[in-house]
Image 1: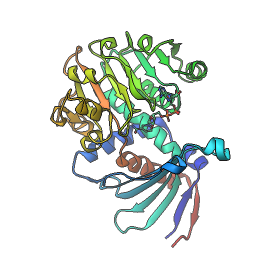
Image 2 (image 1 turned 90 degrees about the horizontal axis):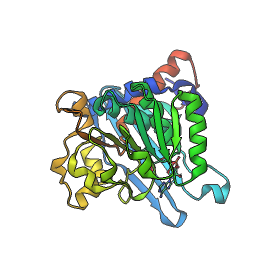
Image 3 (image 1 turned 120 degrees about the horizontal axis):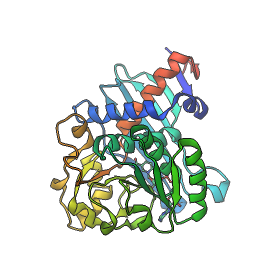
Image 4 (image 1 turned 60 degrees about the vertical axis):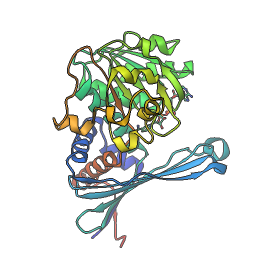
Length: 328
Ligand SMILES: NC(=O)c1ccc[n+]([C@@H]2O[C@H](COP(=O)([O-])OP(=O)(O)OC[C@H]3O[C@@H](n4cnc5c(N)ncnc54)[C@H](O)[C@@H]3O)[C@@H](O)[C@H]2O)c1
């Protein structure tokens, strides 16, 4: 048996947002059907180097694969070595016999499966008549989230805020050309939030940016940026009047935006309404009125990588893409 090696260009040619949304939706359902074993995330922290390597792993009976993603982030790489700051590799093993079927580049996978997560949450929890999206942050995830949301709802207008004005201009240029939506750069986060039907938070910030009083009834919030302890984008008071849906209760109570509201005593872990897989499976209710505020707190799960990588591997075999070698 051979092992397939997929480079970043190979992966790019095999990835698209539509397939990834379907794969991530299946992954969330598998997670809440007892089909997934997903150990806690391991992190190697190297403070002297301003670096962190996260290792996320899972077995899924749905894909019949074991997926291990190693993702080093060396934040000083650009200035020290003129190298990218993020690298990631996925190893896929056949769940039936453990054979290493594929090694693939995975930085694009992380980006697209996170966008897909926001898209799945919008499909499940946002008002169907939502047309205006407010985006806090104008980087990679601001793009990925909008691509996914546009696929699940006919969004017309995007209000974007970033603390770096030039980022908003490039975001407007890129997204208007790619998606045919109107993008309005905003001077303040308040302007981006007020009147928006869907709010997406995608910064690595560590203090509230979206204040409770700006958010109207019926809003859906995709809380994406705060994925580890110490990060924060939402005013904790929002949690007292929202239906809170998370990707993983375990991860979101130890490292997500929900943790901030729990620490502040606004809610307890028991107030989390559901994991998103439970909503998708119909085990728990989703939105029940046009007045409800819903928050989807995403910390990013290995099972999303597993489903996305398994899909890429399958398409690579069908299209004979990649380098097949006798590895073992
Ligand atoms: N939940 C998940 O599964 C998941 C997956 C991938 C990334 N993330 C997180 O999403 C966030 C955004 O990732 P990205 O790839 O878009 O990053 P990026 O660097 O491409 O974009 C970040 C954006 O936030 C802005 N920003 C930076 N620091 C800020 C601060 N202190 N306050 C306000 N704005 C600030 C930047 O100017 C930029 O607009 C990060 O926190 C990342 O860790 C989460």
